[in-house]
Amino acid sequence: MKLAVGCGSFFIRFNHSYLTPAKHASLIRRISGKKSISATSRDYSTGPLFGNHNNTFRTTTRQGAYGSTEVLNQDLISDKFPRVKLAFEVVSEHTSTYFPKAPIIILHGLFGNRANNRTIARQLNERLERDVYLPDLRNHGLSPHIGRHDYPSMAADVEMFIEDQKFEHAPIIVGHSMGAKVAMSVVLRKPDLCSMLVSIDNAPVATMPTMSFPRYVKKLQEIVENPKIQTFGEAEKSLRDVENSPVIRQFLLTILQRTKDENEPGRYRFKARIPLGILNDAIVKGNIANWEFNPWVHQYTCPSLFIRGTRSHYISDESLQDVGRFFPRFEVRDIDATHWVNTEKPQECSDLIADFVERNEDL
Image (cartoon, rainbow, N blue to C red; front, side):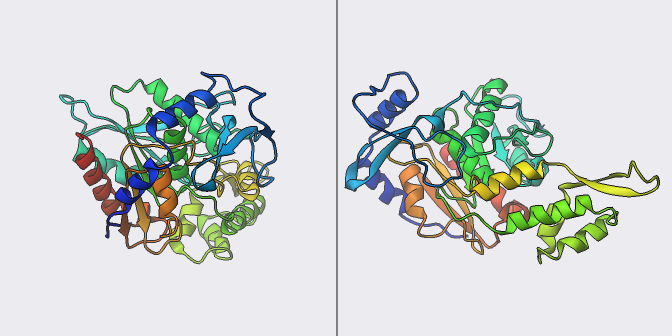
């Protein structure tokens, strides 16, 4: 485990030169509708960077510091699109009843569900003596299926979940992979909703869509459609065609559910627990790899922790500059693991998160 010394202080100084908290608040008020934007004072731009987004791209632009462009995209902070109620569970065995504390919310990654983070949740609940909530994101686990799957819509679901719980203290939001980008989207859309952020192996940057997940989807669909594959052993053997790691193959098997074949008594078939078509569409269009927020407009100034797997490429050294622009009070820690650091090293992850919370909670 290593600490990137000095990164946070560097970006705090850099941040002061281009976006003050007052300016940030003013921009948020303007783009959230609390203060109208005159159509005559700005020209609107409608063209997307890529043809893979779900919003309307109605933005206003103006020149910012260092020649950068401020992009005011009202759709990124909209609450007007359909939201769904998230299924969830709470780990509360060791929660203190005498001193209520800010709860923790942990968001899973693509193809995952609440079960992926139960080990970390139990460890955090025992050490920090507070409730740990494990929601299933839309189109995952037991939560509803819906056609739109991008970060603004997933963030809006989580925001509604937080508001429905009526927490006494602003929660600490944690996310892994896709869930990390959802968590970042929540705090950038509504900076006052959460008291701290933890991103596990993902950064606020757009990347090229990964080719592995479409291969996973295609293979899972083949397994579902093949009546000859009846056991998990046979399904696991089929997954070897697209994935060498036994850990990831076991993870992919959790997407499948073995049921009795209605057409042939005594035989079994597999069905998918999640809408593979919807998720494949989101992956291919780039919605999962994408990142539309702009640090000239959106910023979160509460404590933020970024945990990296040293054998993962998701948070590169080069991306730390982007991290600092969005999250000036960030720190980064490294764990010897792959991208699946939360399942490979749950104790180390929970220790880093607990230490981070204990150091920053009373500041």
